[in-house]
Length: 475
Image (cartoon, rainbow, N blue to C red; front, side):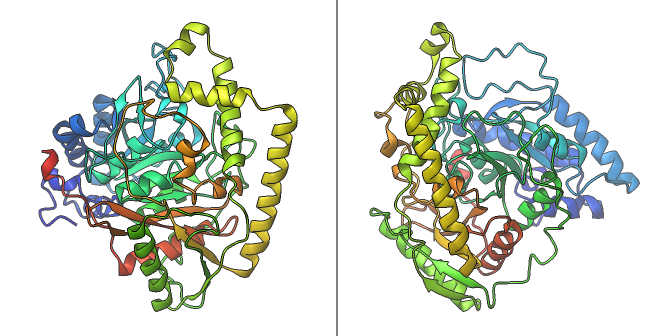
């Protein structure tokens, strides 16, 4: 926690848990925290381009009301007064949700919250704005014709990843300690790895969605945070079902803070450095994630190097993804299609080539993968892998290289399998490259094992605290 706790600039570097403690003891207020976050945005977001829409007036009103509640000793929820950002794929009352696309008319009432936004608002969180995405969340880097290029706080020449790149950059740079993202093929975990945050993809359906993603049942919602503790706090708020999402899981009465510090001693952990097929893992990524796996041994886990035993499912993931792109593209007018990101247009054209038989075969193969992983995880409590096979690459404009399955996801072979299987998975920082870029370790749990993933991540974090970027070069 910053030493000058009431210094507004320092408040931007507090975790959500730290802010709540400061509110509780009267050492800071939600108004001061919101001011700190907007002050940080004023100073550095011109370089990073993490946000695509800000709501300073709405945030000030919410922060003022929260400050009054804390002064009266009546906070309404565990995140009361904590600044939060929402990815620009998620409905947020009073703010446009443009999905990174010039094809969507911003001049609409925007009267409805998505379930996750409504839960946060009901818990007293202060929603400060919407974070940038590639068009329709179509790729694992964040650039679009609408909002331009979003950049990485560790090195603005590098990408923060995507599609939750704006969310990850905002958290890493202290422009709100919590961000809500979506993950359809790694879109929470890849930016978390590139930006040095904690990022969680919960079990599919644990966090309800509405409207449902056009990319189908691979799309999860989850938090980016400065700490694992913060993520557990967020999950306690956003995990309840919503009738608008017919795929949402039944009520979950678990308190994810209970047992968070129980450690990993005695847990059965599989360590797979390549998943059996990843051929081009960067040597610094390989070395850092191996050290992280060894740390689990030091913490008392029973670690075995073993591959789950499936072939690379890249074509399943991208096939289903391209099909969703084709569906969205087909709903646009020719004039709108002409406005789209060339990467999204290329994905749509690839999707148009899939026959009904092709699609059915993809679903059947996905089912076989899911069954295999359910059986594999019967022998293990956790699976460890690298989060991404490479460090963050250069931040480039949309359409910088031809779009195909390899260019879209071939460099992230560890993420998309677990969207297909719908398992919970996270990325937690496990080191830096010689160039000072973050490296992420992926922790995968069995289906519905979200609490176990958080517990394991917390155990690792307790030995290896999450580093923060030096923001002075951005000032």
